[in-house]
Image 1 (cartoon, rainbow, N blue to C red):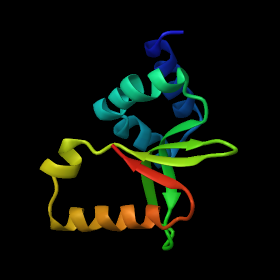
Image 2 (tube, one colour; image 1 turned 30 degrees about the vertical axis):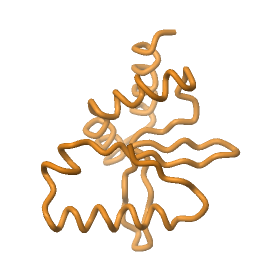
Image 3 (spheres, rainbow, N blue to C red; image 1 turned 90 degrees about the vertical axis):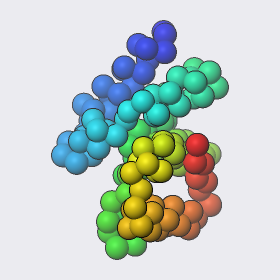
Image 4 (cartoon, rainbow, N blue to C red; image 1 turned 60 degrees about the vertical axis):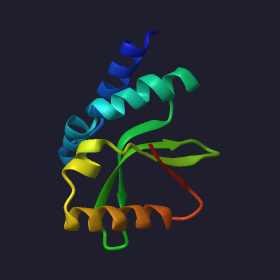
Length: 119
């Protein structure tokens, strides 16, 4: 199966299983940077999207939701992957957004033995 067909199936499969804000985040959040990551990094490395979850929700210690760009969840590995796009992480950043982003990354890093990779 080609990347295009596999990626389309991957996103549609996750959309069908989600409702509410979880579905909305996937519809709004999986954009060009995430797609480029899938095409240029994930697909050449693994050739499939098994166990990869786009716009994965994580609750912080206050019960507030954070959505990670991807989570790869297998029996042996729990990996959070963040894509650092220019727009949302640089161009559109103000002091409050920067503070919120630092809090988010600190929380994700402190979650335990899982790893976070920012690309």
